[in-house]
Image 1 (cartoon, rainbow, N blue to C red):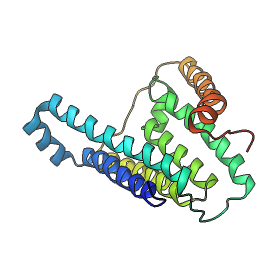
Image 2 (tube, rainbow, N blue to C red):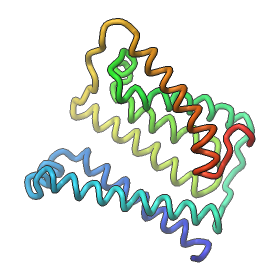
Image 3 (tube, rainbow, N blue to C red):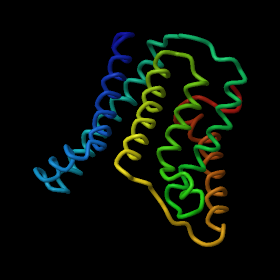
Length: 197
């Protein structure tokens, strides 16, 4: 694979993945697809397209990192410290998606907030072209998806349980996820240590 092909595959994967997810925000087109394919058929097609896009992203980015790295700018060291803090919040927001809490109600769409925070953290800490394309596109998609949700009146979670026990649970599990990502996933799966950079 040539030096440029990894970047091309990454861009193709991003196009496929984001196009499939942006399609979901087009409610009339989505409804027509469901009517034509059935809910199960629609979910199968959506999942297959999304997985194909994700596979291309992973493959393309890995190949780009190995053979075609292109520096655009060099973020100052303090940006990495900010990114570490943002990733703590991203982890907590991700957990809030799955646990009813005041935090989930306040965030309305915690998964989108988590994705935007995650992508911003990585965008400010990495100055190479592939990272800018990868994380910048996810940040743009997160913003667009949130705007689309607001325009269609999707207010997310509107009720919260009494008390703040669930909020404490969200924070505890968010901290655990953050530590797992930083100490194990990032260095051993991604191949980039977090705290020793």
